[in-house]
Length: 441
Image (spheres, rainbow, N blue to C red):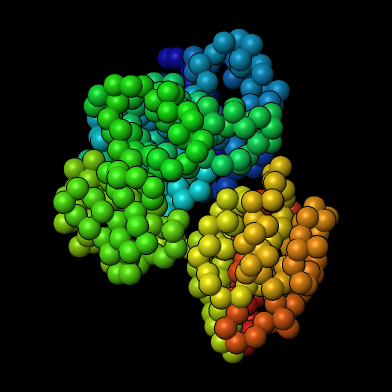
């Protein structure tokens, strides 16, 4: 039997191992770190050999194909060795898509992916379709393909996954926006990151609906990267489009959403809703069905998530805002005076785009991280008051000290979380728990 090796034993890696095993391959999973016990048990139950704490390079390099976790950078020694031997190296998304005839809606972008993916999933599921949710969210795409229970998959896809997609061809391909992010993975070259995002369209043809935000300048200047034969579906504030957004409504062909009645607020969420509605419509759901189901949508946590009110002060958890553009959207969502919490692991951020909004809206900045020097240097002369700490408890207490009735305390970090927290979910959960303990008792 041909050998397929899996690098990385998280949700996607174990799912890929199960699918490969079910298709008759000899499978070997290798993780340089530790595997969760439940994943180890799953591999044992399915008689899949695995190793932890390092890679058996000779065996891996004898593989017919290697499936790589999106968390493993291309510059690691093992990836360099695989490339040197010209072994096929693909993502779980690329591998699993070969084995399903279900319709695929694939969604990428620097910001708003999760909300848009969940909205699209909600619309399709509410219409009675059997829908799988996968990619960066939900269960492994490969595992769901193996179980073969779905008519359509909605996939949230990162640039890292797209980097290792070659034949992947979604039926509906969605690109929300492109702003600088993860540049440490792309040699600090924005054009490399742009090229990665546009890979979602690389195999598009006349049967593919390509949905994108037409007002994004980076997308506009790179439209030649989308095959001309594809079907373009656009969202815009500026021009008549398939989804035309005004201050009061989103106008589709034959359907209207009044924004005052929508469950999500802010101009960025108007874009997310418009894109998701178009994507679901292109996947076969009527606008009337979509509009009926929209009021029942509940967003995922850590995205402008209210987590308590104290003496007229609202606390908001936006821990998912791990880049500057996400913070820009968050600041635009509030008219009240803001106490802003930022900080963490800087990813090559440039903060100038935030300056006008910070000057207008932020009465105090709390820098939360192990190294706050860049934030302090940039915003020190802009905000009326600034406090730097590596303690979440001290940060919340300082916010409580500064806040008055009518203020909003907004955790919107613009940075990765790995200096003080396991991930952005852990950061958001700890923030919510700290607010509950210190503010609400």
